[in-house]
Image 1 (cartoon, one colour):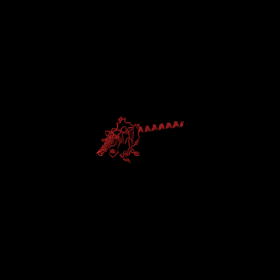
Image 2: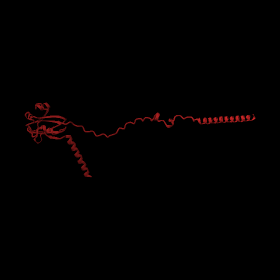
Image 3: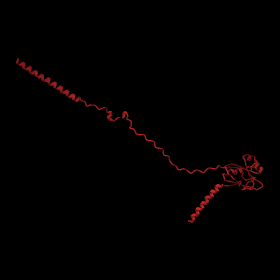
Image 4: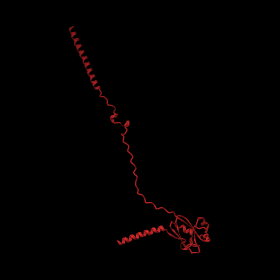
Length: 212
């Protein structure tokens, strides 16, 4: 139980230390081991280019007090090595400067001759980036359902009629068979009458001839 509490406390201390370190920034020693020297082994411009500076970072200038100083100046005074109108002067020998904003900062030596020999420095502090917002959970948007159109019976084309419709209107039953049979009956009767009359006439004529 005690080991768990110790581990938890150690974790909290580490987190707090990390946050404090981030909030305070980093400390850069200008010129490295050479310090703020007149003839450094690495040019100050090159040293500044290979480093990245942020707000709350600190520059540390190491030099002999009374023999030199560090001046924060404007852009024009930087290029002209004007030491008469500095924005801020650092003269205590072990000088520190904290970046309180982003953008360019111009540093020159308090000795104009040393400044003209290259003892000056431009630092560009990167802009503060806002912390990214936590991702929002994805919620798909369901489109509103549109009313479905009422279904209507499909249109029937003239060529798609049912067999009963294509057969045409129902026709009345034909009476030709009856008329034909009645015609045959009438013809048979007339033939019989003719034959009967002929036979009767022949009998009458025969009897008349015999009497004569």
